[in-house]
Image 1 (cartoon, rainbow, N blue to C red):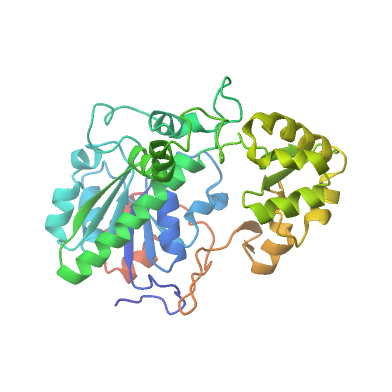
Image 2: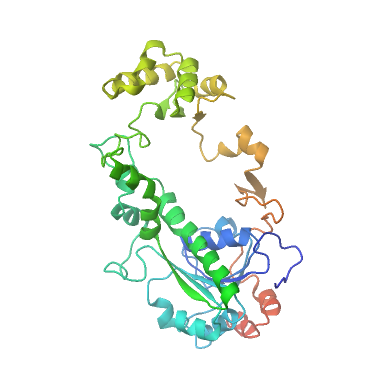
Amino acid sequence: MRTTHTDRHGPLTGVRVVELAGIGPGPFAAMLLADLGADVVRIDRPGGNALGIDPARDLTNRNKRSVLVDLKAGDGPATVLDLVARADVLIEGYRPGVTERLGIGPDVCLARNPRLVYGRMTGWGQDGPLAPTAGHDIGYIAITGALGMIGPDPEGPPVIPANLLGDYAGGSLYLVIGVLAALQHARAHGEGQVVDAAIVDGTAHLTTMIRGMLAAGSWQDRRGTNLLDGGCPFYGVYETSDGGHMAVGALEERFYAEFVRLLGIGEAAAGRYDFARWPELRDAVAKAFLGRTRREWTDVFDGSDACVAPVLSLGEAPSHPHLAARATFTEHGGLTQPAPAPRFSVTPGTLRKGPALPGADTAEVARDWAVPSLHTQETSA
């Protein structure tokens, strides 16, 4: 297995990844591979910064190296193919047909490197009537039924879960799973392939358990009326006296018993199994939580099996005692950020370097990957 840097760590040490610069789920997937030790070389375009933020703060580009290649220049595609010839994986997130028109599509790349895993990240997928159209996370999760499930009020609009559900859960993580599975096949059989990771496919796949419950009659196709969607009074979020919130997930009977004991709601607790009394139970729980601050309720439930937690902001989360003890967040280059995950007992992922600045590593990659044509790109940029 190749190793170009002795300070590389993680189970993917020695794996080489070419990432065609994009935004959203593609860069996040490449970051995850880099966190796990892969040597990820991001191909940035001269003058390009589609995300519109300071590249030094774009955390999805941490643990990577960046080179500048003008894909529309005469020698640009040839330089990419020189990198592809030495890579294990390529990740791209363009609309279907774009890399083909640029001369770096799957057929060309696999002809140059038959063992290559060619990962494609899109919202709609590589085919289907919507494949050539623009889109964003909210539209992808909308047509899968996932967005329609989220929200406390069956008569009101769904609640938008940022872009975590589609872009990153249904997109990035499925791309990574696909790439790693295809990489295993390539190493066992010497045969590369294309991974078509579509956010609509991944998000639909995430709803498998709910669809099973729907088929069994234990889930209503109507948001805000079910056990796990806010319809249940002991699985929801409640406001505290100081405007904070507490999250309750006391589903199992013994956890529920602990919850109502510490909350102190007395007789109202008997409504657990009576759907007709759920509104009464919800009102009792809400009224009780309004009696104290979030800090006070956090202390009440701390260390218990009541399955209650404070709802923290992004800024507050790193200081939570449990997350601090596990070092779930870390600081690098003055930026607080999530630590690599998951964890490995023998080959831990590491945060080796901050966000790669566009083109900053061109000479280094040209040397390490033995791609002289990168020097030409560096000069022309």
